[in-house]
Image 1 (cartoon, rainbow, N blue to C red):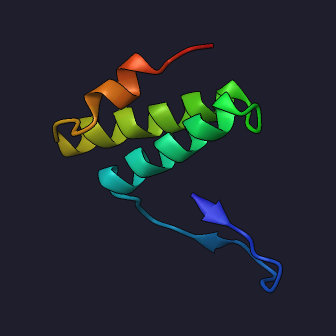
Image 2 (image 1 turned 45 degrees about the vertical axis):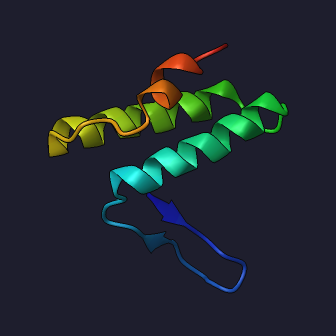
Amino acid sequence: MSRLQHSEEGWTEHEKINLEDLQKMREVLFNKYQRRRLPWGDVVQIDTMIEDEQAAGGGEDTAGNMTQGNNRQ
């Protein structure tokens, strides 16, 4: 994942984002989607990142309802 701020000339690379932060980001993105400020594909993309992190870490989803119950299109 990377980001670019107005004061930066290049992208800042982020090696790894932990599962808790991904889940918080998913909640924010889903809220934006509900207000029609974000396309559904962005929510799907963060869901994929969460699933990949869970598979890699073998950890349990602490917010299972958030990743499974709110997948409206």
